Length: 130
Image 1 (tube, helix red, strand yellow):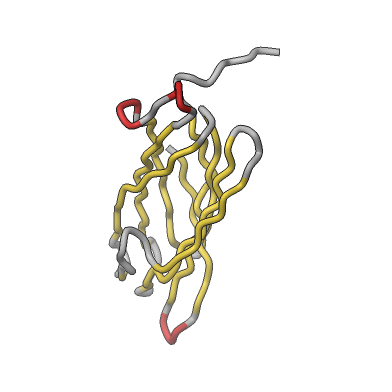
Image 2: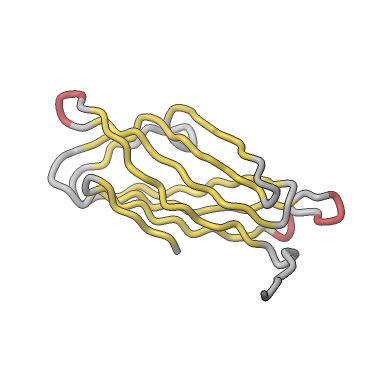
């Protein structure tokens, strides 16, 4: 698992490879990732937007931006959390994701929360030891 805290918002991510949805012979690899967003602070916040940078094993970058997550813009009261699972396909057997959420705090104050970088590794990725 990967975890990072920004402005009292803890984001924890656990990626997992989806063998049944992947087709290595066709260069199609699929991962899901489970995200937990915890408000460890003392003020209510709302997740407004997301931004992802997805890099495959060949260094190609895809950026994804949009409102909320999985169709929601959850409100997080102090001490509460929100969890969701999403996924991404890649044309290579490994990659990396990193991103941020834009949150709205009291009085309309906007701030960014980092999503920790996490690796997408499949059992089809050759291991090389130097």
